[in-house]
Length: 237
Ligand code: ADP
Ligand code: ADP
Image 1 (cartoon, rainbow, N blue to C red):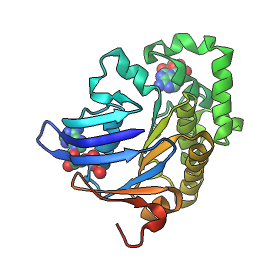
Image 2 (image 1 turned 120 degrees about the vertical axis):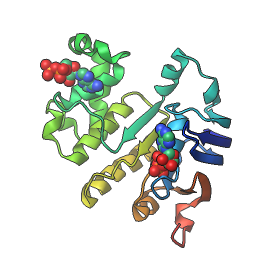
Image 3 (image 1 turned 30 degrees about the vertical axis):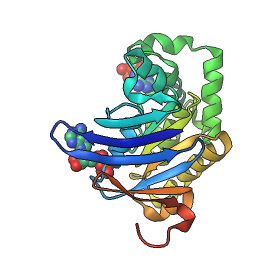
Image 4 (image 1 turned 45 degrees about the horizontal axis):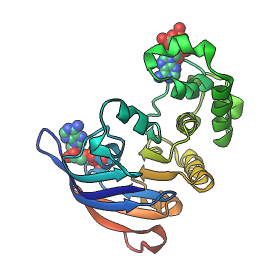
């Protein structure tokens, strides 16, 4: 459960990116957030995992008051929330499997030391996550040999390996062609449905949002201007 109660976010330059946001999202929902560039979509997502801090109001994620988390608690909290970016954020010069295994490393500076000694259990989890998104056969291929769609699936597998409750996806298909986009959206849908993972996705392709999401939240100038079932959207939001 994700709950925004009267949430404002004002950046240091005085830009009010979120203006009195009230939203409640249940476990297992697939929500698309739509709106023009600069509307506040990214900020909204990034407050949920504390990449940004809210300025006022209250933000609850599974009974955790996000603003109250301190130091190490933030890292533990984030392990249950996967984040997917437009740019995939992978290490392209190493294998697909290594990129997934990195989700088990507590501190990235230790990665070199860790590569040789990943627990059997971690490798099994990583491989099964790759299987889930249909790229198990690419496990030992270097990431830079893959297409954009395949790379986004690696990012998705890396997130899945952590057993997240929630996946936040910030324009995950923005740099993909229409066919690949559909395949990636299918993966999100399967993960959402089969694993009951809440998916919260910023997306500017409204038609794609309507096709895959259960619920649409429209954001404009930091405010929620639409919130309803995807199946009930009749006019352009
Ligand atoms: P969207 O994701 O809908 O494009 P953003 O959340 O990125 O919108 O941005 C909302 C507003 O906040 C915009 O006016 C943007 O310029 C501003 N903004 C975003 N990030 C920052 C930041 N780190 N510092 C200052 N202003 C920011
Ligand atoms: P090399 O080119 O000799 O492999 P690198 O500097 O590229 O050396 O990285 C060393 C190892 O650590 C590589 O396996 C690299 O891919 C891995 N690594 C470092 N950071 C990450 C990360 N964020 N995700 C995945 N692998 C990483």
